[in-house]
Each structure stands twice: as C-alpha cells, then as structure tokens.
Amino acid sequence: MRLLSRKASCNTHGQDSSYFLGWQEYEKNPYDEVKNPKGIIQMGLAENQLSFHLLESWLAKNPDAAGFKRDGKSIFRELALFQDYHGLPAFKQALVDFMSEIRGNKVTFDPNHIVLTAGATSANETLMFCLAEPGEAFLLPTPYYPGFDRDLKWRTGVEIVPIHCTSSNGFQITEAALNQAFEEAENRNLRVKGVLVTNPSNPLGTTMTSNEHNLLVSFIEAKKIHLISDEIYSGTVFTSPGFVSVMEILKNRNYDKFSEVWKRVHVVYSLSKDLGLPGFRVGAIYSNDEMVVAAATKMSSFGLVSSQTQYLLSAMLSDRNFTKKYISENQKRLKKRHGMLVSGLQKAGVSCLKSNAGLFCWVDMRHLLRSNTFEAEMELWKKIVYDVKLNISPGSSCHCTEPGWFRVCFANMSEETLELAMQRLKSFVTEYNRINNSNKESSAKNSRRRSLTKWVFRLSFDGADRQPEER
Ligand SMILES: Cc1ncc(COP(=O)(O)O)c(C=O)c1O
Image 1 (tube, protein in one colour):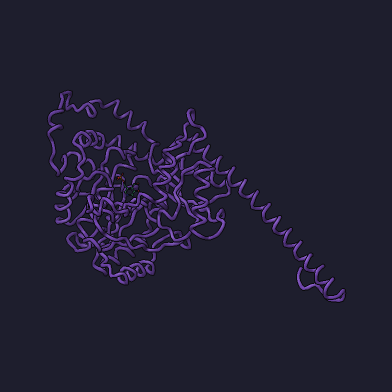
Image 2 (image 1 turned 180 degrees about the horizontal axis):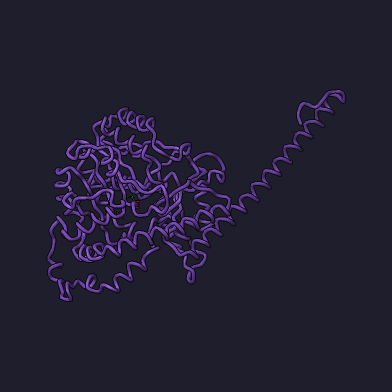
C-alpha cells in the first residue's frame, strides 16, 4: 500500500534540473573571499543585492516601521492578530502606486484588483489553479525560468507547451512559433488555456517589443485564451528601450475596460527582484476579472504575506521620495554591473545577447562546445562548475532549443567577486583555446603525415610514374 500521495512521491517538481543541481554544488563548496577563496562562485542565483544600503538607510531613518510602532506607540498586538486574507489596505495602495511608478505612471492599478501572495511563485501557481484544469496547457516561450516547471505544473497538474524561440531573431516570439505551439498542444490533446510570458524575460534579460506584445494580445483575443505577464523584473530595466507593461499595450489598443480581453490579461508581480527582498515573500496578482480576483483572494489563505511585512513595506513604499530615488539608483547600479559582466566576458572572448534588464545575461558559449549537442553543453557546464568553479545555469535547464547558451547572474555578489569570476572564465577560455589549437595543429600534422604516407605508399606500390591522388 502506498503511504505517500502521488504528488509527494512524483518527480515533476523539477528539483533534479541542472539549475537546482548547480545550487547544491555551490552549497557544498561556496566561495568566500577569506574562508574559501577557491570555492564555487554563485552566478546561478537571480538575486539583487546592489541596493541594500538604500533600504537599510531608510530603515535607520524610520525606526517605527520595523519596530511595529505608529506615531511612537506600539501596534504589535494589532499586527499579531491581523489575519485578513484581503491584506492591509494601506499596503495594497502602496504596492499599486509603486507598480505605477515603475511603469512611469503611464498606467494606474486599482488596489481592489490586486491579490497579495507569498511571492510570484505563489502568484503564478494560484493563477494556474484559477485558470486551468489539470491536463490543460499554457504556452511558454523558450528559454524560460526553470522554476516554472515547479510553479505552474507540479501541484496543479497543468502542462507547459513550449513556444520555440531561437537566436536567429534574438529569441523573440514569432507568429509562426505561437501557431506551432498551439498545434503541438492540439496534437497532444491538450486544451490551451493561455500564454505565460516574463517581461522582462528571465533568462534573456530583454524587454518585450511592441511587435511581440501586439502579436500576443491578438493571439489570445483570437483564440479566446488568457495571457499572464510575469513582470517581476519590471523595475530592473536599466537602459533603453524602456519597460512597457502589457497593461499599457491594452490601454493603447483602446480596448473597453469591461471587454473580454481586459478580463483575460493578468499581471504577476513581486518585490523579490526590484527591491531585492525574496526572503520577505511578497508577491501579487493583478487581474481585471473580478471572479479571478475573488477566487485568488480565497486561495491566498495558503500563502499569505505576514502582517508585519505588510506594515513595514507599506510605510517604505508610501514614501514617494524614497521609491523614486530607489528605482533610479537601483537601475544605475544594475547598468554598471551589467557593463562589468559584458566587458569581462568580452575579454574572455565570450559574447552575450544584447540586453537591457534583469539580473543576468544570456551568454553564448556555443564556440566552446565539443559538438552542437546538449550532451556537450552538460560537459561544458560540469567543467565550468567543477573546474572553473562558477555556478552558471545551462540553457537546457531553461528549455532552450539551442545548445551552448548559459544564464549568468551579476547582481548577487560584490564587484571584486565578479572580477574574480571573469578572471577564472578568461583563464579557462585561454586554456581551452590553447588545447584546442594544439589539438587542431597535431591533427593537421597527423593528416598531413597520413597523406604523405599514402602518397609514398602509392608511389612505391603503383609505380613511380603515377601521380599522387591525395595531398
Ligand atoms: C520570472 C520569475 N517568476 C517568478 C519568480 C519567483 O519569485 P518569488 O521569489 O517572488 O517567488 C522568479 C524568481 O526567480 C522569476 O524569475
């Protein structure tokens, strides 16, 4: 008799992906400047540690917020007892205002349409529970965030069907790829309930073009399905083109606010990346469908944001001087860091997809593969983790269809650590090229020797008057 549920014993969680395996290897031998200078540098974690000083200095100036006081008086008991799954109104207002500010106040969000969740992880799963039955499908452009296999599929039983994007156009979504994914789902007898995209993209670090947006909106309108836009990285856009939310696209297309399309587009957000607070577990679903908002609110009981966290962050995010300064300073820091990574890679002879957002680059190491296969990608990845001691994420863990791409994070370490990581990579590539060139030279020599031997062989056997056939 089975003592555990199928869910508990199945392996669709995705924990065995190289994305998570790399983290485990890092945990066994983590780099530390003093204690373990030869350890593995973690470049597989999309964390933003670049602007903590701004958060810390705000906390120092506003001791009431973290001390659970209002006007100097303790509100500890009030917060300890608060358990309403609708969330603190002041926090919801502050969060929607922050979301608008990130979008240059071109769109506004109604606090009655927002549902608080324990991070974007919970927001995405909750939306799956609201929008699809087990065995129904969502289409996702590749490469995609490896955590989606867990978040969207594991407990819900929903299937992911990939929209295959390629390097030929910078991994942008095309109409042909969308239609092909839809057909693939139909061939697998899966009913498609929607498309889920990340904008800016994890792992590409690029923002969605208006062409892609319009394509997607027309597609979901025609097919009568949903569109989820995970905009968790919206505040990380550090250079042009700027960030455009799907909400702005809907507004610009002049859809009636009560139209079906408005109701079928949902935004996911979180403070894990823009504010660098993944440990606080603050996420949100924004939807124009009242039924979705009501159902998701009830479901949010399973992953609430604690009232202390809501209280603290409502004070922080309603300080508009602070949020303005934070957003621009954070973007400046990300831009600088991104520049450091790109130039470090260049010095090692490695290029990456041109990007304008996120906490990572999508790095092209196809020239370092032994062959154009995913086995070769794994081989290279193992060398980089175990020999070079850098944990980066292979493209295959993001379901990329082309071997040789890797996601490399740049915002979860100090500048010195990033410099060291680039030195390690450069030494590796130099050594790789040296061995490769000497292998090529010796195989060229061997083949020249072979030709000569054949030539001599033929001369001596076929007679001196015969011309050699191979050289
Ligand atoms: C695209 C995307 N969605 C969701 C998540 C989960 O974020 P959270 O920490 O808010 O659960 C991540 C985290 O890396 C992500 O990259």
